Length: 177
Image (cartoon, rainbow, N blue to C red):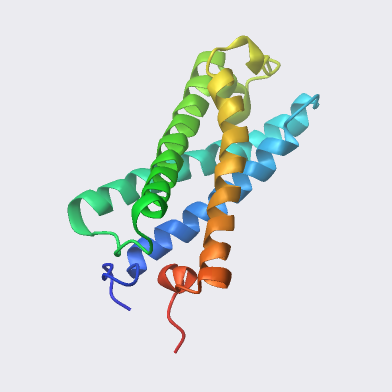
């Protein structure tokens, strides 16, 4: 399988970044939902010890993916035309922007609240109330929007594969030998 994308398939690097990001986003959604609502500090710290590094990994993967597209690779040809192609392009752009907003607001939230000291460096101070910090607003709203966008992304992929039968999923999955 080639490293770079072709007009009909994603290359192995784009595929690897896509699926690693997808798994990391799933982990972030699960750990984020685990912290939604009242939770004891010890449990929240344990979850944040996973959530924060995974969020940083998503930032690194997102930046690597953007750089890969800009510097070394190109996307395969669009599957649809007109409104469908525009919707796909807008949906992907929204995902990229939201990934950046979510990771940067998470970093800002940890930095401004001082929670990093408690979560990673053994401070015995209680966790701050994250709701007291402005980055919590885009992070919280962004998490709901991320769930919706990921759901739409998956639904569109299934629709393309099952109903349009245009090979959308085969473009982003490794070839069977």
